[in-house]
Length: 357
Image 1 (spheres, one colour):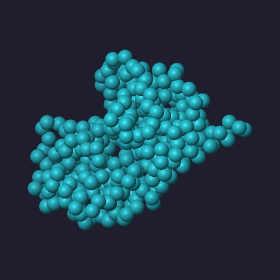
Image 2 (cartoon, rainbow, N blue to C red; image 1 turned 180 degrees about the vertical axis):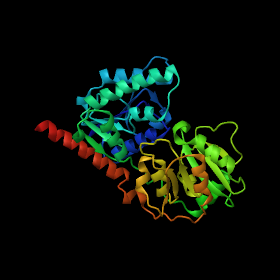
Image 3 (cartoon, rainbow, N blue to C red; image 1 turned 30 degrees about the vertical axis):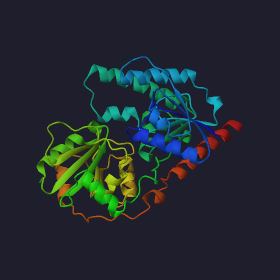
Image 4 (cartoon, rainbow, N blue to C red; image 1 turned 90 degrees about the vertical axis):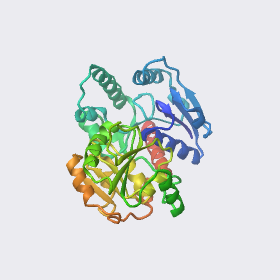
């Protein structure tokens, strides 16, 4: 099949960028031809994959406005008929399937905006989001939570929505051997005498960074430590909160800590959770995270909220052997890339059937 994937950037980054790489790998492994459309291209990354990469030029604008310009331009230029199936991971309306990792209207409800700039930004996001839901034939919601949020906020035919969880690259995220764990612990100075927590985040505001800092400031630094991977942490962070940089391959870090933690205010899915569990590391998250319902009480804790006192109370009860995660989390929950690609193609076939009626 000829597949087109549209996104703001073809580069390593946050959850949606990781998801894009998983799609590219999956379609290529299935023998498909893949074309990428983006305004930002990491050429070194693109060279790793036998894809056709199309860079859409944009004016020298600030990042968010560049994205909006890209959406308008690709909506006009993209030829949907050239491909058997086209997907977009951003709020375009020119493709067969809209991949929805979150509903912006819900974000606005949960995160208070104070500046005029954010208000203008929200108006553009909402306009593109509404147009996308109205025009695109199929919507892929990355969780049941997102599916319900779409229906709560927009007049969308429920029949055009399919809930598909984003997959895990099990060739990367997997249990590590003891040698890898020992090397990783030395590399990141992980103290085995302490209870260690990993917080992967490229968007601290809604993922609970402020609450974690407040909680760890009250916890004994000789007993617990928090490793933050992704975006830098505030300069005046507690001694037991350490920034380990942007880590391209988090799998060995997941496997080398005692827990992964994601106390988000709002997280439509939260790929951190299944990634960690696939590496056999238990998790701590909140009920506001879409993937929270996937794991059992033996595999982690789902907190009612992310208040510092709740985090403190939860962490003080933990020991290194509090939970047991069984191998094969991704397979048990249908989160492998191969299964995901099959499910996407089934959506495409539904579209073909609909058009032939």
